[in-house]
Structures are given as structure tokens and as C-alpha cells.
Image (tube, rainbow, N blue to C red):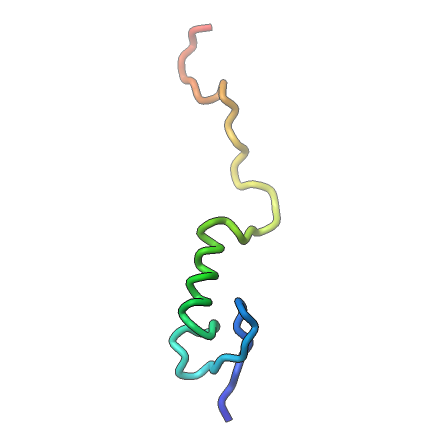
Length: 64
């Protein structure tokens, strides 16, 4: 019996063994998921790694 898993993108059953797109059912679902990551559609909860710089912090000159 072949193992089948639900595709994380569309939830259809997809074969695990012999599937070059696993855990996805197709290249379309795999690329859709990659696009969501690239466009920041998915985010990991938590504080930002680095606080954003204020406009005044970008200058290195001491002329005030």
C-alpha cells in the first residue's frame, strides 16, 4: 500500500513515494508555496530580528 499525504497547499491526497514534488501534489502547488514565502505571505511570529533605523540614525556626519 502506498503512503499518501495531504498537500499543504490544496489539501488533496498526494503519493509520498515517487513524487518529485513532495510534500506537495504538483509543481504548481510547490511554486505557489514558494511564492508565498518570497512575497512574505507567511511570517513567523515574534519580534523583528533588528529594529528599524530612524531617519536620523542613517547619517554619519556630526554637523548639527
